[in-house]
Length: 79
Image (tube, rainbow, N blue to C red; front, top):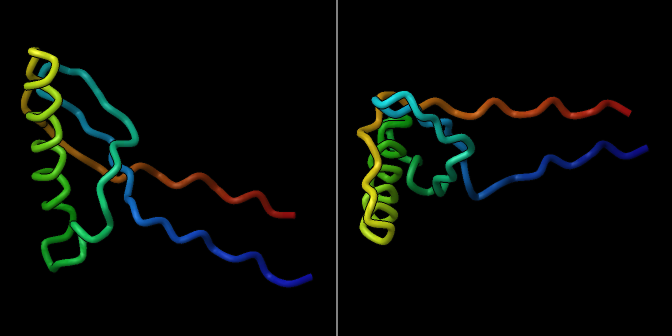
């Protein structure tokens, strides 16, 4: 049986915690935004920009971001 191929995604998922205690899971950030030496810091900037756009459209701005972390990947089932 040939080995299974890994699926390469063009996005990285992040879990975001806001200062008001709310949480947003699986926020997608393009992989190209994270290709520098800054690690995951550009993801926070990208998500803050998304939040500003969403807040402007809805009229309800989001609270400031307290922390971000990469969403843990699901374990692949072994056949």
